Amino acid sequence: MHNAYQQLVTELQRLDTLNAIQGILGWDEQVNLPESSSAFRGLQLAEFARIYHRESTAPALGKLLDFLQSDKIELDADQAIVVAEARKNFDLATKVPETFVAKRTEARSRSYHAWVAARKANDFAGFASCLEEQLQLSIEETAFLNASDPYDHWIDRFDPGMDAATIERLFTALQSELKPLVNQITSSSIQADTSMLRGFPEDKQEAFLKDVIAAVGFDFKRGRIDRAVHPFCGGHTLDTRMTTRFDENNPLDSLSSALHETGHALYEQGLAPEYRGTALGESVGMAVHESQSRMWENQVGRGKAFWKFWEPRYRALFPSQLAGVDSNQLYLAINNVSISPIRVDADEVTYNLHIMLRFSLEKQLFTGQLRVRDLPEAWNAASSQILGYTPNSDKEGCLQDVHWSCGMFGYFPSYCLGNMLAAQFWYTILDQVPGLECDFEVGDYSRLLAWLRTHVHSQGKRYQTMAIAQKVTGKPLEHESLIRYLKERYLPLYS
Ligand code: ZN
Image 1 (tube, protein in one colour):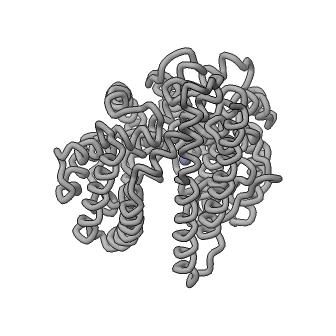
Image 2 (spheres, rainbow, N blue to C red; image 1 turned 180 degrees about the vertical axis):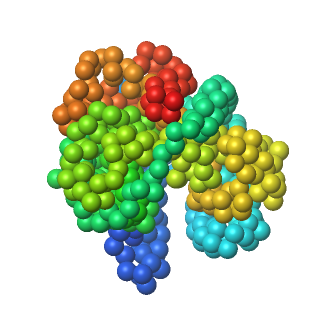
Image 3 (cartoon, protein in one colour; image 1 turned 45 degrees about the vertical axis):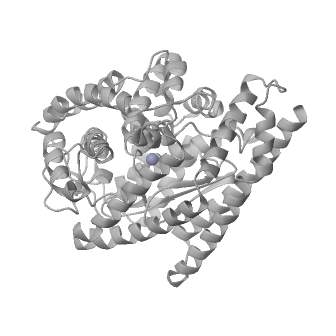
């Protein structure tokens, strides 16, 4: 029996190695690929995907799982988690026919390119049929898996154990307290002025940013940060790859997005390498991942204690650029809150409203209450109702995000759930690690990282999204901590 389990782990680690190679090909595509080589990279990725699919659906693996799940075998709790997760992944890969997978892959790529063109031209009509196809294929795929509710199925894929009804309940409660708070902040006579921050040379920004991410604990011996059009974190616990971008006239953006990606990277680097390839060495899901990135970006990186340490260093690097900006103005710019149309540019307060808007529309698309061709009007109406902003174009509205073009429905809620979870973890940490923010004043993050390693990172996928909230904080996932945190941070600044 021990033998069969060991055999499974060996096989899962082999698949993990293959998957990591695929990841590096994808990273390289974003970071290094010569312009005219993209079609060839497409071929390489498609060929590799076929190899991976063949390996991960091998009948021998299915037989091994059958054996391990039979009554001849007794597994301990950890082993049972590994076997159950491997079974889930095996079924997901084998129950969907290869012809359908190929069809969906091709449609996804076509739809992505149609979206790029449609967004550029502000032409929703030119993208509508692709979006319709993505929605139908998403629903069709869940039929192969006997999912009772297609939208719930996709939510569960990103955040195990989560469903639309739970999200609805959490978002409704959050929204009712968030909207008055946003009104209070945005109608204040005090407002940030980010236009003062101009002419920050990219190389110096990069040097500063690398100091910051090394200080918070990113291990450069098994990871790197490079430049790419879109910031992301990919790779593996043994070789973590992050990207960022620089804008000389928007230096705080690259810093906060790099800290965000570092939060993802610290989670990846904190997974137990001895369990790699298995559920015990894997992240829980996107909400927990976002809780990590958001915590480093916001709770830590926008905090007073953090800047007490870094501000003198920042000023030493950019003396002339910051000459006319006093500490209060800088701190207000770091914590700028304003209603804006684009989600990826949104501050941490209004960001949640952007997500609620997307969630409300996704749900209606899946139930058929909303037809794809009516999406622009529905988006604009929901945007003015939830966000308080009516887009001037579809580019500012329903064409702004890439997710749906690639068939990623059910992903958006993770961002907001991650914000809630980050705040909930944060207050638990402040309780359990007294004087934590004094550490930040001297640039020390080791106690925070150690806590996250113990309570979140090293747990792998032992707990689902809701269960890890309960286990770590002693209560179910809730919205009150996020509201408390936002009030504590922003009300003193804006009143
Ligand atoms: Zn993220």
